[in-house]
Length: 352
Image 1 (cartoon, helix red, strand yellow):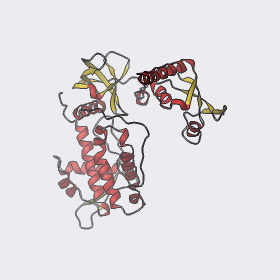
Image 2 (image 1 turned 135 degrees about the vertical axis):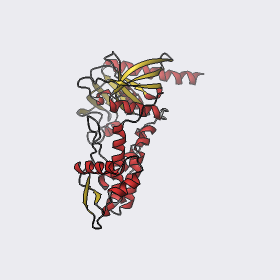
Image 3 (image 1 turned 90 degrees about the horizontal axis):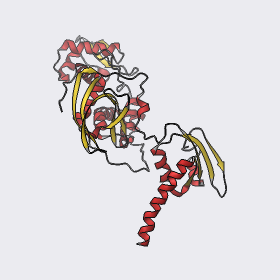
Image 4 (image 1 turned 120 degrees about the vertical axis):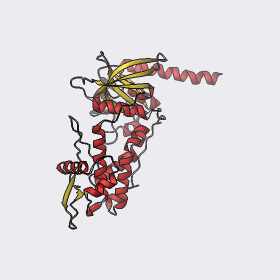
């Protein structure tokens, strides 16, 4: 893979985040531009550091005051405002960074409690921010700091092991997304068991379950694709060829869902009392809105509108004998055929 050089905008953004972090570590005493320049360990001059600090000040992420010892300006963080960093690019980036103990607490909680939802590559990208947040909270002896270790999450669903991803390829895709250029890739198709060379317009990344998907269009095709990043074998940046984003494109609409039909279906289930309690309006309903009406012997009817996806079928099968699909007939027939086939395996094993 041909590695692209790091764009100037990235270096500027990274440097300003480092500066803000160093200022935050100085606490209420503040710090001078000269001290920051010495600690930064970046190949820039003092005037560049001063310009960065002025940019952060205009964004209300930092504030300054005269040093009583006559050493110039002292820089401090302004916790009342989010950190918005202006990058040197046509569309300025404004990522929210740490601004208070509450934000630090949110970052730590999200990292620790949602880590099973993220790929290792995503966790690696966030780890520095997570460590800074933990350091800040550990230093604070107030309610926010004492909140650490008081929340835990889990899931009853089996989590597959993460697909191996080449971090250099992930970085190459990230750079292409931010800079807006095409990629030439060698992609392994599991269906054909062959490598195919493609030119793609990368439009976004979808971190889902145990994989990272590149949402893209192949050059000359209007079809939106979701390609697993772990099947990329080579990436060559085409920096001179700009990506054209489709009109009204919304990344959230292209999460990797396998739709068995385009239109939603009217779903009618017969569920037992235990599942009915779990799917109650005040608990974890299957849909909003949904209708629950009593049947006989403690069973209930549940009706709602649902997207007809592979995930819906898997959810129905996972609940086994606690529910029965009544409508639509095509879904009922499909579930019944799957259950008959599965039951046949165990029947044959018992007879053998």
